[in-house]
Length: 168
Image 1 (cartoon, rainbow, N blue to C red):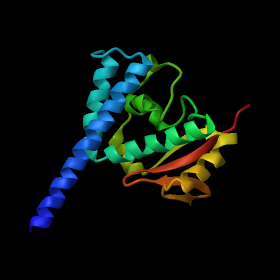
Image 2 (tube, one colour; image 1 turned 180 degrees about the vertical axis):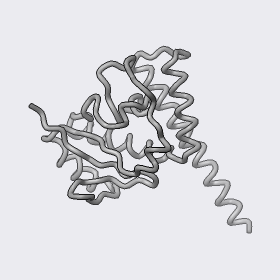
Image 3 (cartoon, rainbow, N blue to C red; image 1 turned 135 degrees about the horizontal axis):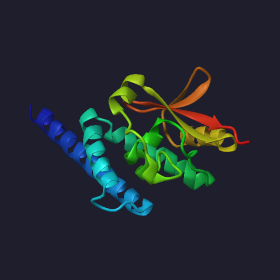
Image 4 (cartoon, rainbow, N blue to C red; image 1 turned 30 degrees about the horizontal axis):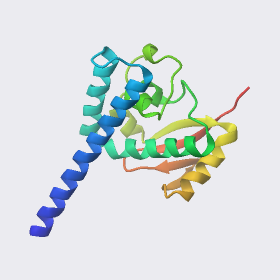
């Protein structure tokens, strides 16, 4: 009985720490983007963070950030701007999971409940980087597989399709 209680306590502390980490990284990312603290986008990000925590996506987003940041550090390439459903999420933009050309021009916010139901969400890299990104993810312990011939990274609630953008 005591072991079960201690494990639940450890899990609760771990979840709280992950949520605080995500909140800090989003606030830091918003500051780097020039979003004013207390502004509309800032408040929208805080509300979105609470919704993400309710849905249990905190750890998924932290792991996605780790994947995207690792690819960016290793290959100097970030995700393609204004692509994928993550470009509708101020949290994902602040974390660097998505990029937009103008942060103040974000449309309707991302529906995270639909994202969980959809399960497969794409993230786009340039054609020259995509295969290297997948290889790097495999080498660094990310759970990868393929779905309909496209590489995916598996997280607990979402599968991230690592897709390519062909540059003209």
